[in-house]
Length: 256
Image (cartoon, rainbow, N blue to C red; front, side, top):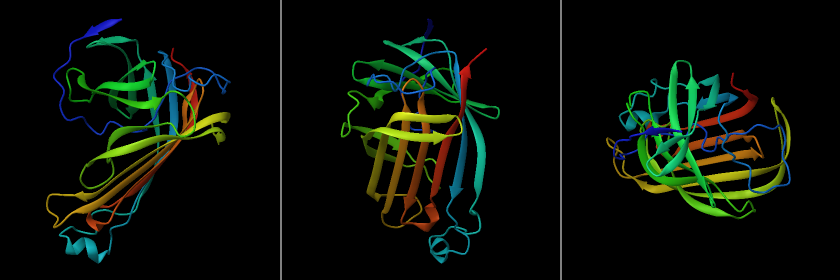
């Protein structure tokens, strides 16, 4: 296990491509209830992702807010995101697993750890960061795995004109769902939803306050992690825009 020296914590980046991406190695769900987010190095997950931005073109509200409505058009992008796990490292007092998000030539790293309560982030590292940046631990998966289990998290918007940090209530909504994606059929999976909202967001350049809402739902298969995710970002201000994001697991395999 390598030792990493990290810089002091600062405002973290928009670190959630999939709010709940996991690691694993078997192709199904079993009866154990605490293993939907295992941490294992040397595996790769590939997702087919789609991003659809809301149209601002010809929207008179955007022009009134001083924003060129023709600068953002409705668009749908289909891309492959790849997640790789490296070897465990020592990050502050945590034994952390690096999770690399690869998109083209860009690689963004988050660091995961776990305890008896679940799996949580402890740091992140962007392309321009020399060393990992420590952050306050934040759970993305919690035990026990029962419908109704909830906890508090934070998220940054990723597709709005201005990144905005929101407080969220994250909850295990269902257990025992079946999900069909290109990678296969996964039974007895769990559904986790994060709902984030702020009705009094002050955005530079806009008068008054704005309403910003984010909802993200992920389905996790035991020993696999996330097999499907859907996310919506919306506001009451046309100039801030909005978007829908979805991703499905297409393959997973051992890294060679």
